[in-house]
Amino acid sequence: MPLFTTVVSFVEGFKPAVQAACAPFMMDLVSYAQAFGNGQSEKVNAEMYLPYVSQTIATYILNVKAQNFTAMGNNLGLLFQILVGSADLEVIAPQQYTMEELLTLRLNALSIFTNETNAAEVFQGFADALNKTDVNVTALAELTTGLQTLVMAANTLKSSLQTGDYDSDITAIETFITEVLEFVRNAKAGLEADYALEGQYYEAFFSAPLKTLGQALFNEALNLPEITKMSFEQQEDLLNGDFSDFGEISAQIAQIVYANL
Image 1 (cartoon, one colour):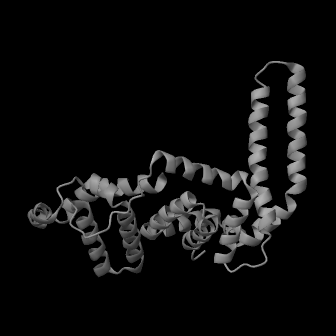
Image 2 (tube, rainbow, N blue to C red; image 1 turned 30 degrees about the horizontal axis):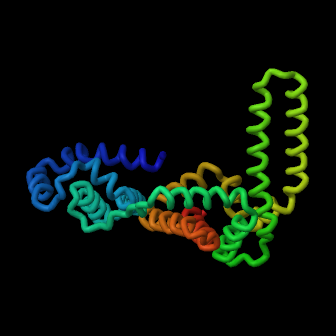
């Protein structure tokens, strides 16, 4: 996970940087950590409070750009508190599920790609959250389940080609090409519906891919506590089969990640 790797790398370089910059105050910092910290290592605390570490670093970067030195100092102070475990923050953790609940969750997640009714509910929730009333969610659902069928067809082709039988290889290739062409013929309405729903994101990416990707990753880092909580809410939705709410939260996350593009 690139975001996690970036945050951990920052954290690993944080302590030496503070020691070099704040050498006269190191004893005070050590005393503070011993008196108010939780006794865990910086790495453990960084992992435990990762969403807040990410958010603090992103906020620090914003303040660097704005040359707001007081705010930068506050950010570094908060980051130090997080890493020594003295900050009063909620540990954002997923719900612990039983094996039966995990199986239900996974099956419901898979059903979004195999069950047109469930897929349509997801896309309807997504469209409703964006106040888009003219999206053909049925076509989107058909496109989604069709993609899953295409993946299965590709896997079947791969297995067939491993038999070494020339005639069966030819038949398998012909069957796969037929299924691809059938999918393409039926994909127009779904692709148009997908563009109606998410076209603004595609346009931003194709016009400036690196800028869009960078801004999206930064938005994710800046809002990671909120996004993480919303992702856990989506797990609950999948467990309960609430596909519409799953779609609504997906749209809300997309709006956060792709803001300011």
